[in-house]
View 1 (cartoon, one colour):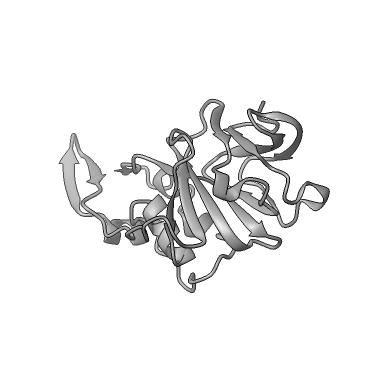
View 2 (view 1 turned 60 degrees about the vertical axis):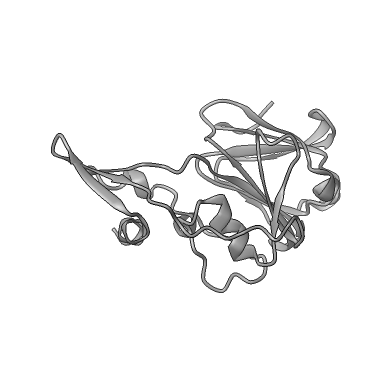
Length: 198
């Protein structure tokens, strides 16, 4: 209920449709990109390598979620829990339908171990099928050291461009605090709803 209340405070228009409350996002105050500079970047599985970057980690998460997720104490990178990201919030209320944003956070890649350093937030429309992030944006190629997956997604990172082996697998909503010998290796990434995206 707490997550649902948090979302309804951030959403604007509420309509009653056939006895079911339909909550429609209004214009939200997502963060403004810093003209491509900043260590906290956002990309989409369909963006062909383009990124939007921010001076704070919280700003990148706000932008990636269209202002629906506002993190406390998020000037620097840190692990984001599934409850903070709102995973499952839309499914917990049988009497209401929470309309999802046009994209959601699939995973966050971190340049430091322990969910620290610069970040690359991957967004997309979901993981009901295998979706590709394709090659890493050049600014994040061979830089990932830790990763967290969200929104029912698993992810596989590949050492070579275009999903070339070897690979590092992370399960649905899973994470890697440190990827060991795979640190600073990933050049492409896939997302799916099962362990071992291929």
